Amino acid sequence: MDRLDQVLTAADPLLTRVDQVLSVAGAPAGHDVWLELRRVRLLPGDAARAVAALHPAAIAEAVPELRAQAQACADTAGALPLATTWSGHAAEAYESARRRTAEQLNLGQDSLSHRMTATAELADGLAAWMIRTRAGLAGTLAGVLTSAEALTLVAGAGFPEPEEARAAAEVATILLRSVGDSYDQAEDLLDDASTLTSPQPVG
Image (cartoon, rainbow, N blue to C red; front, side):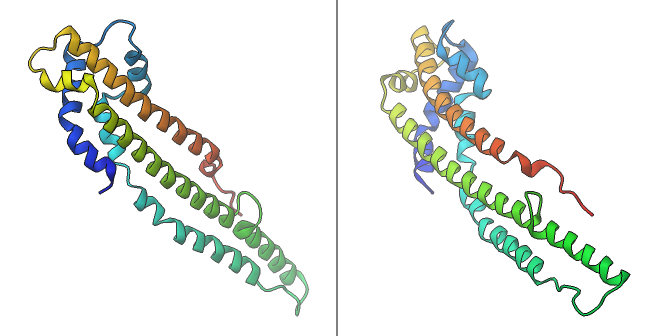
């Protein structure tokens, strides 16, 4: 359990009320929260719980194995024996196949070794992003919990008054902006790794 798990437990009543107020009463016209709602496409409580569902350790655990597999591909490519003791068509065919296999294993952007290394780097980056995102939201939630808007919302009940609608919009804007900014960073990471989605040539 990290800080986000702890803060989220304390913030659950506030998040529930913010979602309830926004769903029932909406938010003031022209408020920044509308932009953030369109951007994230989740209510603040759902967005916070989506971040809490990120598990960086599960991603990070895959990195050593990916790097080991990349090294195994490189080692295998280097260990393929040359056709030095025989000649003729069979030797030429073997040498052609050996070079092709070595290239697929360890040469160029499309080789298995390169792709596994790039996947390991992506996993590293995603795990670090998850840690930053969780920590960032934990700090944002902690700040929101001590705000005047939070006091207004937690004290309210029933159909929200205009003051509560404004308070919910303020809290939601802060939380959704934090989540949205973090997810923009994740999109940049995935864009940088877009070559991994292209099929590897075979043969």
